[in-house]
Amino acid sequence: METLREQLFAHIKKKYKAAPEYLWRKFPGYAVFRHSDNRKWFAIVMDVPGNKLGLETEEIIDILNVKIADPFLADILMQQEGFFRGYHISRGNWVSVALDGTVGFDEICRWLEESYTATASVKTKQAVRPTKEWIIPANPKYYDVEAAFSKENEIDWKQGKGIKTGDTVFLYVAAPVSAVLYKCRVTKTDMPYLFDNGKIHMTSLMKIKLLKRYKPEQFPFAVLSEKYGIHAVRGPRGIPKSLSEALQ
Image (cartoon, rainbow, N blue to C red; front, side, top):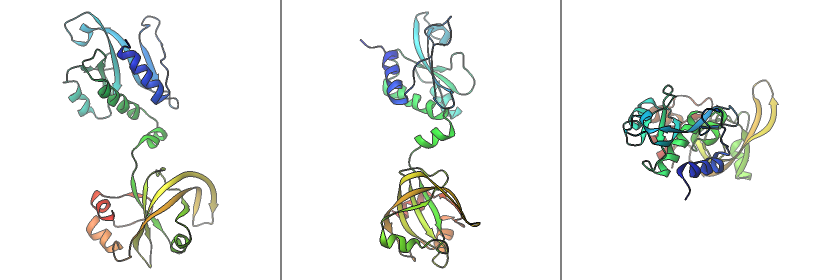
């Protein structure tokens, strides 16, 4: 029968494309898993005597060490059965999880995912984060977005920092319109494109697909400012939940 250690190793290989590294000759059962880009550890599997964890047994058990981003959450976890302060890695919010059946496999994978995200590079965090909603400016002085969407429902747009494929963008068309007019889905990002005319500088484009149109009087600048606290739209920015719900 497959052990939890073996099940976990197979899961890490499949989902994170990471193989175990055995770094200590003295501890042949200790396996480290790293990110491929920044080489940081996101998981460590060890076999240790139970009494080293505060248990009343000297029996060897497997544990998984994971890093929890929120120290308050880490403290809460360590009060639950099967969770311990990080063995040999007590600093940095590391938590040890027993691989003896006390903690269910799905929950183990949940905290493994938390650790993978907490230790990831900025680029990896960006890739694995949930989709997000943005409001971005469109200046009719430089580009006639209304004419573009009258011809096609998918157009190229300047790549916004932090925006990734699958995100939703709401286009705020500047004066003389001064209102949100379009809801779009980002279908492709990081398309190389060099452009600089002294006023506009671009190094990459994204594709956006039109999903919905709004009338200028629905979400004008006055409403965005007074009701939703958006006092300027100079670049890509997230939107409050209340505005997100209204835009649906």
